[in-house]
Image (cartoon, rainbow, N blue to C red; front, side):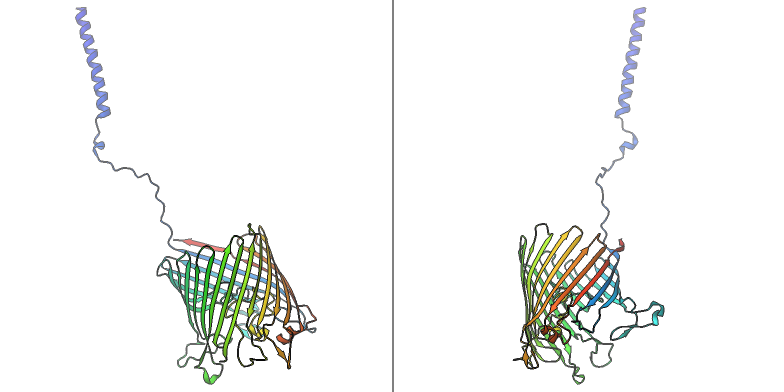
Length: 467
């Protein structure tokens, strides 16, 4: 009986063990109703947010400049005294960019401190040397630029135009008001090695009902057509060309329908290799000047530049050559080259004694120059030397005068503690000849013209929105 009972007990235990194992297996392998639902694979990639397509930026460009002038632009005489002034230019900029259209607005206020008394209110006037104007606040730039593609666009409205080294077309930012153009500008840039532009402008004094009589306060072109091209031929050579036609209305009131066209054609070839840079620019000017006189003039500028490997030292040696009228043989023909709407401040010396052809009495100019520049972190020091020589033979009271006009030396110090602030100090002086006073029709060659300035500029970004 005991054996039978032991067998039964063993059988029951064996049966329980097998049953528990079966239940365990069933619990692990048998799918639940939820498992029967087909699941999609999990995407483990990190999705980046879409890149902003548009931006709106607000910025400030404010410059305050203090000057002590005793020979700036004009040679002093014994009875002249120095002039001290503080001037300020403030621009509030709004820049909108998108894939389809860009819009840029720059509201500008430019004045000498004290030129406008703020206590007079908006009806007050600001008295200048030759005119009275109400609060000089206006749009320095205001344009829209629709994009036809990522390479082609059309900029329409008031805008800066700066080409090449800014000798012919410049924003002329040194001047208190600067320089901008009312124009339409077709721009193509493949963003690799080729860019070209067409500029068109036609100006009037107001909304005329009849006629196209143009009567600006300051003589200016009536029509302007420009073609610009910049082509990087390879790693070392770059070609730039500028061809311009600007028309001036006849100064004779009875001939206001006549527009005299002046043409300027030429360009620049640049060669760069390691630390060296070589360039030569040449332009031909022809057609008629603003008085209707036949024009045939030319300009060229060779230059060589050395830059140290670290960029801390730069030396430039070059020359500007402006053709002029030889008063002994061509008194009735205009052979004086005019550098259109560029800047002279960076080329003919900071004192701007010889700024436009009228400053050298249309006799032309040869301007050899030697520049040096040193940089240490946030500090830059530059020194320029200019020699002024009359290109043609100028005759005064029947006698030819000396072609040597003088020498100018300029020093400039810049301290840029950050991207927002730039502090600049300049000291310039010149030693001019008797011939310079004759050509300039003023001044005493025994005196030393000099000029000192201190300028501080703030360019903060006030806010930016991307969307």
